[in-house]
Picture 1 (cartoon, rainbow, N blue to C red):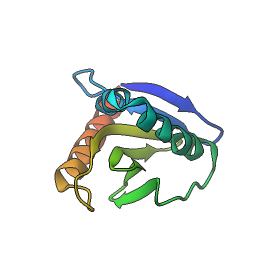
Picture 2 (picture 1 turned 90 degrees about the vertical axis):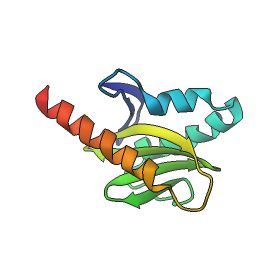
Picture 3 (picture 1 turned 60 degrees about the horizontal axis):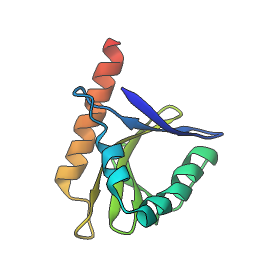
Length: 120
């Protein structure tokens, strides 16, 4: 259900694998050009290593417990479950606001995660 990307001092970054076994966030991330993917490295590590990482240019609260790790127009949507930061999916943003469909997708995948976790 989870694939660990990075274990830090204060948390762990993990890719969520949906009920079909697909890690949408990881698939998006690995398909990015090397230069863009490399820029995600620092914020992902800071989030896991620092107890209160606050940089709204790189890591933003999108409301309802959904967060986004941001590099240029690329977004990795995620949520917290204790010390875990679970990445649900990624997308390239085309406007200033996160499209409602992308936020809804993050909610749906988060709900699926909690449902599967509860039945495990």
